[in-house]
Length: 152
Image (cartoon, rainbow, N blue to C red):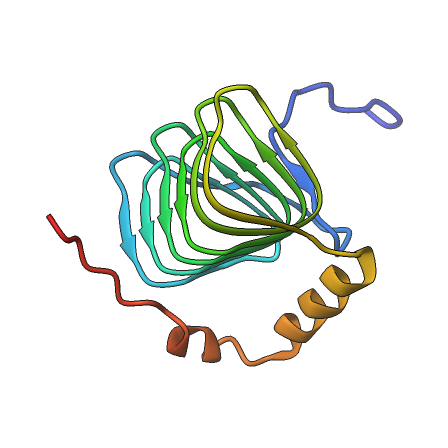
């Protein structure tokens, strides 16, 4: 009917560009070797060996990223081995981070583990660096992938 709004619940999030998009969900049975680039929201419960760049990122308890992360908002419940660069970083009690966290704001629950450094960045530095990264061709990220080997 005219004038009647649809009352169905939705999982869609509004991204910076003003578009409404569905989050990209990577399940716990998924292993990716390579970079992930998105203009929206990524939810990781699997294993990523490569860099991740997006607007908002959530790494679930079973999620694991071995590479660098660049996003505006990062929520970590799982594990990250690499550099995290974000405006806002939230570490849950189950979070395990090995590397450098460059942030504007950061919150950390009791029990979260960090082996590395936390560097507070001024607001304009994070925004300028994010704009510079967005201006670079996406193929250049492939050159920055670290080759990680397990030393067991």
